Amino acid sequence: GANKSVLQWLPHGEAWKVVRWDALRREILPRYFSDLRDENGQGCGSIDAFLWHLTAWGFDEVKSGAESGAYRHDLFIRGALKLCSKMRFSATETNGPKAVSPAPPTGS
Image (cartoon, rainbow, N blue to C red; front, side, top):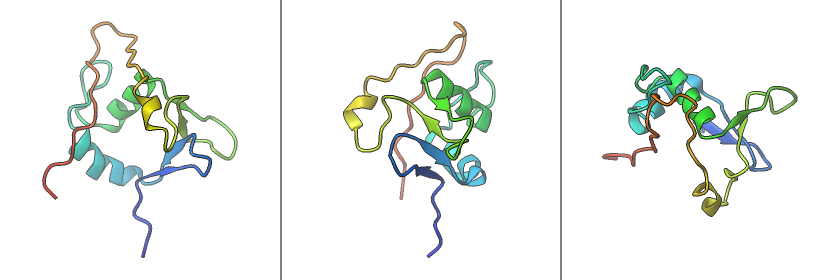
């Protein structure tokens, strides 16, 4: 069958990328991240709010090379679940949004 993945780990497991931005916006953000707001408190569940939160959680976008467009974090490694508990939210704006963790799926 067709690959329906929205996000995909890179083979080394130290970065991931969005492979279907349309599905991220339409399916994933409303279901798991509906409370996300950007630094101005706007954009409930929008791509901009999602990207702002990636930065606030310390993810870096890979800007060049074969992995360009992927996101990485030293504490977000495939299979290393205990590491991500050490991740910290760091909004530069003091009046920005509070940290939002993904909500567990409802139904299904």
